[in-house]
Image 1: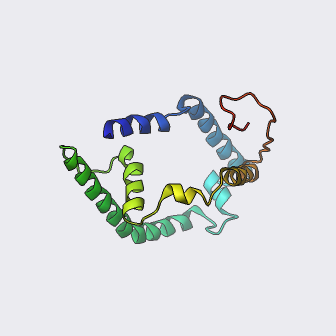
Image 2 (image 1 turned 135 degrees about the vertical axis):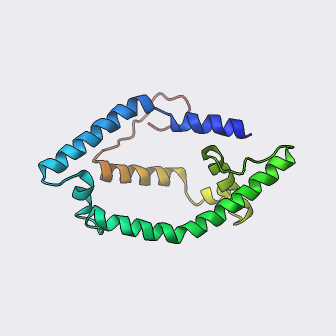
Length: 164
């Protein structure tokens, strides 16, 4: 149901927005301050110097070229999604608005994967056990953010399978 997808998408994308907005604003200010102290004009210039792109001016042409190559693929996928949406809306006695809205994207993207590419998300998940994926993600966060995660044994949680 499109209205339900819209409500859920808005709720999902609004999680913690009030708290995180202030944190992200402060983070951007601190990154800019650090770049200036180290003699760079901005955070992007500071970060890119040690990466393959080397500078923000090198990134823009790369992104334009990549975008141009990907546009036909994007357009073809969106066309398939629009077809599925039109079929589904017609079967329900309605009509499509001719757009893949933000709240439609995940739903029809999954439909494309299942119908066009025969990808079964449930079967695929068998190759990615939760504990392996969780440990891998936590390792990445520890490395990228300088954090350290420690499992709390016998933690009181809302469900026995929840790890803390």
